[in-house]
Image (cartoon, rainbow, N blue to C red):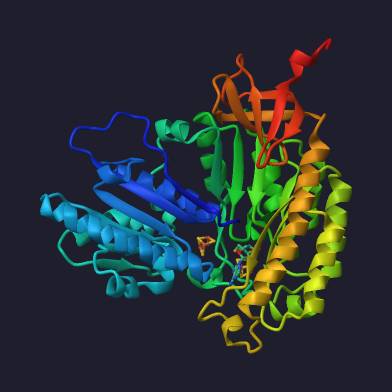
Length: 470
Ligand code: SAH
Ligand code: SF4
Ligand code: F3S
């Protein structure tokens, strides 16, 4: 999971039905929220809502929120302040505007949201969003509705399947949530409280959804979970399946060219999953495996339940199975009690691993987590200084990784039009954005290209066939 996403759900492909209402969904946080926003849009379609990318024309504005750091939660309240004014202006014109808050802030704050932002009509948690249409109907009665109870029913069984036209509109890559929640209780993290305990979706439900996605033109599926590699379910012939088994099963779907999964916990990287990286060509050579810190003392205080050396050994085993695998990570600097020496252990671990991609953050105190009660908080100044040093090293590694790709011939999955005519943006196996002039190819094709150069956030390539005889 990385929580840099902040985007709106693509507009529906089909023409709006007469009198249909419009919903604008703003997504904050991780990929799980992106997936959930899509499913909320599916649920609302039954109520006659079509999605729009224009906030101004929406009858319902839904914020799908993130609670991971203080700033992420603050963003939601400032957005709600702006929406209150918009709702007032609408009311003056005699037009309805409903406001909904979903996601992890909804789960963590519940009623408090209505107290702080009375313009909100509906607060709905990540476990109950299949009940969103009903909550909206009730809220039309005039009183705000808060539904953050953990549902006893399986929400996936209660959600309508995504319409084929919508799958097409969402593009050739798709997310598929297979696991939700977290039982790890890292002492800095809100996720176990906002998303509840670990639950895995059954094999058949996942396989059916994957088939539908492929039938709708999807070529690459990323399996999602807060701890995706903790996924466990009963196999078709009895016995327990782990994520590795599921990947083998999904790799059999004709037309599904690429598989990925995110985010994983080092403790749940089992042999079967490593073996899948060795044997499955459909499984892309990219692994997001956060470590957070390099010092054993801090790892212990974070309750990560592994040491730096164990993590390094694990990376070694994974690289032995799939030598070209790109490793991505997450880091927190300035966890309570982190000394300069602890921080240097993080730098050393980063040097040892050599990351292709990484996300790093200053520790943010989250009320209700054990970390919030620890003394010895690190000052903002020290956190900022450490973050800068860490990011300089990580950026250097990322740039070196990008440079090492120049000259290589790789498979590129063409995802969307580029900025220039004839240009298409694709994804490399290592999740890099690659710009290519590919006039004769189409979105969804996988073509061979030769990487020709690097830009600030992407790579450039030429179609490999144009180089034949060159
Ligand atoms: N389940 C994943 C990640 C969950 S949250 C895992 O176990 O790694 C995504 C990232 O946000 C985390 O990896 C962590 O680096 C960061 N994060 C979580 N809580 C944070 C906090 N309180 N302060 C700063 N960063 C945090
Ligand atoms: Fe948060 Fe830790 Fe669970 Fe990841 S494993 S979601 S960091 S508690
Ligand atoms: Fe944020 Fe919730 Fe994801 S807190 S990172 S949206 S699980």
